[in-house]
Image (cartoon, rainbow, N blue to C red; front, side):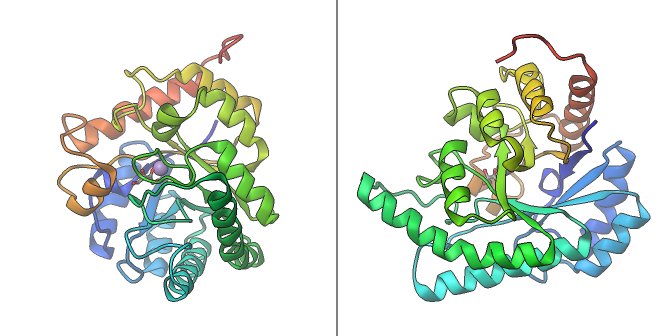
Length: 290
Ligand code: LER
Ligand code: MN
C-alpha cells in the first residue's frame, strides 16, 4: 500500500525548525507514514535538522516547491535565473531530507493568469521548456525527480491538465521530470480524474489527495474508487499526501483561496482523511470504475 502523508500546511505556515519539531511527532502519532514539507523561503527551516527529526520519528519525507508572485520561469531573465536557483535549492533540500521528488507548479507564480492564443502558447511553452531543462538536468544528476503540477484555472492559465503537463514533460525529455497530480485541481479541470492518472502513467511522481472543497479526502463527491483503481492500474507506489490549508495561515490561504474552516480542526481533517485513504486503498478494486 502507498505511504500516506500529511502536509504541514494543515497546521502551520511558514514552517520553522521549532514548528517542525512539534508537528513531526504529532503527524507520526496521528498514524501517518510521511510528512510533506515546503520550501516557502529558503532558510525557514534547516534540512539537516529536519532529516534527523524525520529519521527519529520514522517518517518518510515529501517536498513541495512554492511559487508565490516573483517566482516564475516565464518572466524577466533575472526572475527566471532566481527561480532556477530556487528550484536547484529545492532539489538539494529534497536530497538532504530523503524525498525522492519535489512537486509543485514549477512553471509560473500561483495566481498569475493571462490569455494566450495558440501561437503565443507554443512560444510560451518553448520558453518554459528551455528554462526547465537545466533544472531537470540538475535534478537528474542529484537523483531527485521533479513533479510538474497542473493547477486549476483560477491559480494558473498555463498548465491546467495532465495532458498539458505531459506536453512539457515530453518536450523537456528528461527522465527526472514527471507529474504531480492533485485531486482538487483534477476535479475542476479534468473530464475524468482516473483517465488523467492513466494518461500520466509512469510519469506520475507524486500525488496530492484532498476533497473537492480542499478538506479531507472522502465524504465528498470525488469518485475515489475510480482514482484508487487508476493509481493501482499504473502501479503508482510513491506516497499519497493530503494537501490542505487553513485560513489562519494567511499568505498561503489567500493563494489557495481558503476563506473558511474546512473541518472542525486541523487534526480532524488529517485523521478523517487518513482513515478514509487507508480503507480506500485496502479495498478490492471495483470493476469498470472510471
Ligand atoms: C500546490 O500543491 C497546490 O495544489 C496549489 O493549489 C497551492 O496553491
Ligand atoms: Mn497540490
